[in-house]
Structure formats: structure tokens, C-alpha cells
Amino acid sequence: KTTMSDEVFPDSVKDFVFDLHDASRRSFIASEEQALYSGTFREITAKYFPNVAWPSPAAISSECGGDELFLALYNELTLRHLQSVKRPNVNDRIEGWHAYRQLFDLLLKEAPEDGAEKKRDELFLIPDWCFDILHEFLYQFQGFCQFRTTTYCAAAKTADEPEKRSANVSDALEILGQNRDAWAVETVLFYLHRLVAVGTQKNASATYRYLAYFSSVTLSRLECLLGDYKASIAALDVIYDSKAELICVGEDMKTPEELVNGVFPARLSLAYHSGVSYLMLRRYKDSGSMLGSICLFMQRGFKTGQLRKIPGSEQFNKLFDRMIALLAIISHICPTPILDDSIASIVHDKHANNLSKIEAGEEGYEDLFVFACPKFVNPAVPDYSQALKPGCESTPYGQDAYKLQVKQFMNEMETHATLRKMRSYMTLYTSIGVEKLASFNDMNVEQFESWLTCMKHKMNQLENNDKMGTAMDIHYYVADNVVHVDEAEKVRRFENFFMKQIQNNDDVLRQLEAIKIEL
Image (cartoon, rainbow, N blue to C red):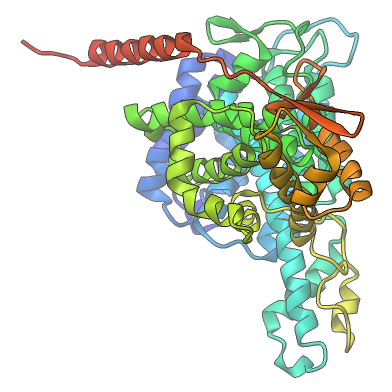
């Protein structure tokens, strides 16, 4: 596929391609590749290709000696830019699928076999580049799933009156029917699992290890979007493996967790999607801890301006607001204090009205969750021919994956409304008869006894140390038809205040040291 820029393009493009090829295939100098990838590419794009395609791989192949793997990397990089500045049509989406398949096939072909002797490295990609490839790969998969569902629904609406169907919808439906294997979820999962397996071998190079750990972050995100929350958490096991070897990142040796934390968009993706997964698994303390820590980090980053320097920073504020909404839900259903005071204050300022509505018995959880949750997808390929038949279903699968997850969440929250009312009465007593407490909750004794058991069950949860814990701030038991309540003692932790002030002073000192004073 040629572009207008294939005819003539500036020398700076040739120099960029030559230098990037040299950095990734010969010199392996991280600082040079970082400058080219994060700086030079954006500068040339802004100057010559702000809204158009870069030269095709065939047009610049002479600058890299026809290196097939590098041309696949270049193709992915330039297609990623093009899809960010124009709305992709069905052909663009399928072209993106073939570009990623070609790239991953070549990467896996060059990867060392398990058990073979470690050979000289032949490829070097900086961590940021590795994550961006995988992040965009899943972003395009998610977009394609939403696109084919939207196209099917648009066709189904006019099934009884085909003359009203637009030509774009008809063409898109036909092309989708001819490319049913495009963005197949089993193939997407295959590539991510293979990259994890190849990169965690003993003989894997640094680049393949980067790809492995960022693939696990991407895999966790994919499983979350599909609604398999246990698999989403399990995908991160390789990152938190205490026996994992250290990885060379520049001049430093880092653990897999430090590698992921060093690329902020990867850290953010991991925290957000694992936080959602923990919430849906009723592991409220783990969810609050994961989301609370990243929100606290981002709050400091917004104050210092460090996050604004990262490409894609315009999305950080949106995701921060969504995570704050999730923390509003968690802090309301999990009475155990799990948030830093500054984050708890932000949660209260932003969502006090919603939470007061919930306390008054009105709906509020659904609005918060719909705003905060990811855009879940259904990976099943629909029967496109059904969309053309009169009287067909308006959605391709009989149910909307997004609405299904919201419904599942709301079913759980309906239970918590009763549990919250029970807890409010139990905190007023050290002992109270079951019959009396049941009458307060407008239930008979038999019904209320099952709710007492339900409360223990719902708030009992697995924690990060793989031990069972509880999200309740009270302990109770029943003996001789009397509920005995022992409220957990609230211990004021003064050391947290002093540690926080020490951290704030350190941040101020670092900012002062960074200021250049010219005399």
C-alpha cells in the first residue's frame, strides 16, 4: 500500500530510519533509541506527517537493508500513528490485524528455543516501545470487537427496511463476513501467552523479557475486558514472582515489578484493571490498596508536573477520575479504613452526593460503576447473515457484554444495601437478641439468621498474602439466640502522619534541588 509520501520524502526521514535500525539491531544503545523513539519520531511526525501516513515500509527498506523484522516494527509504529489521527474504517482495522500478526510471527521466529544456549542478542527495544506495541495491540482488538457489534446492530435496525441501510454498513458487514478470523480472541491470547512463555525462559534476552512482562500486563487487561477476573489476576503472577531473575534495564538491574513501574502507562494499566478485577471478585481491601496507591502517586505527579511530560498524559486525568469513582464504591462497602487521608478527601469531595443518595436508599452505585468501569467486550464472532433477516435480534449475542457486567455488579450491590443496614444497628450494641435485631431489619428470625451468615461470607475474602481475611470492622457471633458484637478497636496511627510529612519534605527538597539558579 503506497502513500503520497512514497514518491519523495525528506532526508530526515531516511536518517531517522537508518539510526533507529542501527540502535535496535546493532549498537543497542538505550539512550539513543529512547531519543529517536520518544523525541525524533514525534518531531518528524509533527513537521511532515501530522495527519497523513508515513512512507510505506517498501519505500524505506533500502535504509535498513531490507531487514524484515525491523520493517514490521516500522510498519506497526507508523500504522499506530495513522490510526491515532484518523478514524479507522473496517479495512484499516483488518490491515492493523495483519500488521501485528506479521510482527509477532517474526518476533517469535527470532526468539531462542527453550533449553538452547543463549546466543548473541540480535534485537534491542527499550521498555517503552515494547509496552506501546502491546498496549496498542489490545486497544485495536477492543476497538474491533466494539466496531463489529456496532455494525451488526446498525444492520439489524434496518433488517425490515433494507433500503434505509447505508452503503457503509452493508460494505462493512460484507468485509467482516469475509474476514471472520480477523482479531480472533484465541489468536490474540495465543500471541500474548507465547510472548510470556518465550520471555521467561532462562536464555531470553532483555528485549524478550520486556515483551514477556508487558504481555502479562496486557493479558491481565484482556481477561478483565472479557470478564474473567480470576484469570486477570493470575496473569500477573509472573511479575510478582519472588524467584524471577533481575532484568537489565539500561545500567540498572531491576525486578519485573520495578520494570513495569518504570513505564508509567504500564503501571497505570496494571493498577486499574487489577483493581477492577479485585472489586468484582469481592476482594475489596486488595482493590482499595491497588487503586489507592496509584491514585496517591498520580496526585503527587500532578502537583509536580512530572506526569505531564509523559506522552499520552491527557488520558491520565480521565483514568484518575474513574479510579476515584471506584474508590468511592469500595470505601462505602468496605468499612475497614484502607485509603490515605488525602485520597479519601478527594473521594468525598467528588462523590459525596452520590454516596449520600445511596445512604438514603436511592440508586447511586450504578452511575459510579458505569462511569468508572472499562468498556467490556464480547469476543464471539456473530453470524453476520442474521443481521440481514427481518425480525432478527437487535444485538448479535442476545445480550450486551457491557450491560451483563453492570448487572452482575448491581446484583452484588443490592445485597450490600441490606448488609449495610444490619451493620449500622450492630455497631450500636455489644449484645442484642436475634429476634429484636431481625425486627429492626424488617425480617423474621429464620430469614435474618441466613443474612447473619451471608454477611460473614460476603465480607470474608482472600488477600494478597494468600490468606483469608475480612473486610469488616466488627466481629460478631451468635450464642443462645443472642448476637454478641465486638467492634474492632480503632488505633490512631500517629507514625503515618509523621512519615507523610517526611515524604512531603523530601519532595519539596527534590524540587528545590532541581531548580537551576544562575548567578
